Image 1: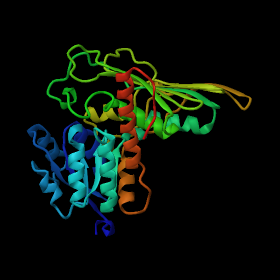
Image 2 (image 1 turned 180 degrees about the horizontal axis):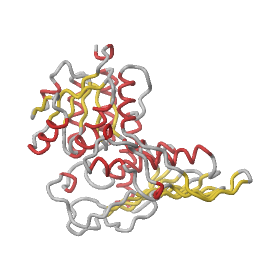
Image 3 (image 1 turned 60 degrees about the horizontal axis):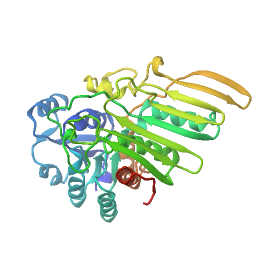
Length: 357
């Protein structure tokens, strides 16, 4: 049984941006995980895989991973429309499964995979890596400290400036699970649900702002809670960014600009095990706190918590070994997709919709 072995052998399906940048480096970092096979067909990606992981076998066939009895864990890092099918195949092959976000195009597909994983007795989780962003960990620290008092408003942005369509990418093609709500929105939604739980109702506006775009490239959604308003937004025509996070409470406010530094470092070709101070934000983008808490007034910067996506895979390893609860439960990832569905419904019907699981 894989659970009794010291090393969990991993097969990675897909070595495009997700597999190359967000999965491979962190699988490689975790003691106890061994990346033994990568499925990839593009020659440029194959060359990078061979240079970085010379001991890893490269294959063009998914079945070479699914049929390998030595592989315990399969990571699905492929286009969104294929997540459900490949995860289902991997679970039926008796593998533990990590699925790149978004989980599946529909909540019904997510529920089916959850039930299948339970039947097979296998770990199923989704790569909601932004829980380990420096800025989000800092938001959690500020909220836990109580310095804002009763929080009444939370805003989170995930914006980029890409006026032209990116060529040769499935992310700009109309398909199940495509568009910015599934892409960047799934991070924002997951973070909000981690902080505040499920909302009572949702109101949203979803649109295409770039005339030539075949997919949704802008959304804004309001999640309503009993004493809290949560606003989430993402767009691709934002040249001058807004604060990444804005939190207001009856004792103070916290504002945070900038984006966690890990993605840029990874895009620049830096590797976490070779880079000092990985995930440490510069002081220039630390958040600003203004609070009157317990009679003490404070206005100034709050040092950001260090981020590290390795924590996700460390947890997966421990969960497979039965030594820790799963950090990203598949039910939580399913709830994210349900919120996506309700955002799309609200925008389409131009009304506020109640949250229904």
